[in-house]
Image (cartoon, rainbow, N blue to C red; front, side):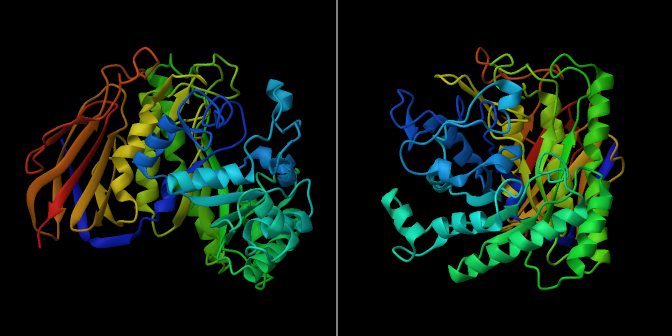
Length: 488
């Protein structure tokens, strides 16, 4: 048995709610056959988005939503997604699945979705196939005051007189790859052009949108170094954040995996911690971490295709098992424990794709995944102050803790597939009456278990009774969350 110590006086930093952010790309079944059913659908909906999905996402408190991509963004023309008689186009992913973009979901629909969820809007700007002026005009359309410009009047004609609220603007996506196959030096020049015009129109419209530079793939520290070096020479270049993407890649089948596959996945997922620390150290080394705050705007497990409900029709759709739940818990614990360095993350993706929270068949069937339940169990961390957690053995357990409104939220995951763990919990530097307001466990007898349309609640959090004065049993492949009232 080991001891887990929560050092209450040792504050790490505020956990930005945006750390629990989400990503919704036009790919496969994320929107069409997923979140979007249309206003005239027999499926209950709000402004065309299925109501059951909205209700579930509201429950976990989606803080920010990234759109429209992803790689999709780099061929997207915003004008295709406004007004009536919208054109059907090839999109980035047509080459993979033969599906075309109807543009039913465009700018107005995205902001409807954000409003329905109470989420901040994170807009990804196309850098590969449009000009800075095109980007500026999209923002003019979105942000200009009612009746002020020709594009503001066009927005009003299309049903929205008042400006939209944009919170974050990403300049490009994966520009080291599908986003133009750029070098970091070339991208830096493009970023400076786009960011300058974006900043100009935002200030003209009195928008406080924050600009995020497109960062590295995984451990491509050379990209971060060269981009940071370039931006450090131009202090007038606007900026707030720098993103990077981190996927836990394929280790065995999505569902029928072995214990060795499980262990490989956990090892790969754990690497996000040294990766984010090194990216952060590079920007600090150039003295520009104030304009290159870390954003991980794509993360999650990427398993082989075809295991989701559509049996391969929806591109990259995959089933979500207890293994994905543990990766989610591990990742969120890491983000919480580095709340002084991480300002936003966006799990990929919301529905019918990689590491999804929801799976549906385009009809009446919709289920939550184990990944969804971890976000639900961790939601009390959002906006709380992270505190230090000391583990005797972080090979088997992952944990984080935070304080908000007189309560301590403590989340704990057993990273092993087949071994129960036991730990004592010591709260250092505070008084507590040991009354647990809430305690829940997410577990299942088989590490491969997952929810299906036939068994939609096979895996769901269960309320448990815990007394932290006694040792806590943490079942194999499980997640525990608890809320402890602190003494005055």
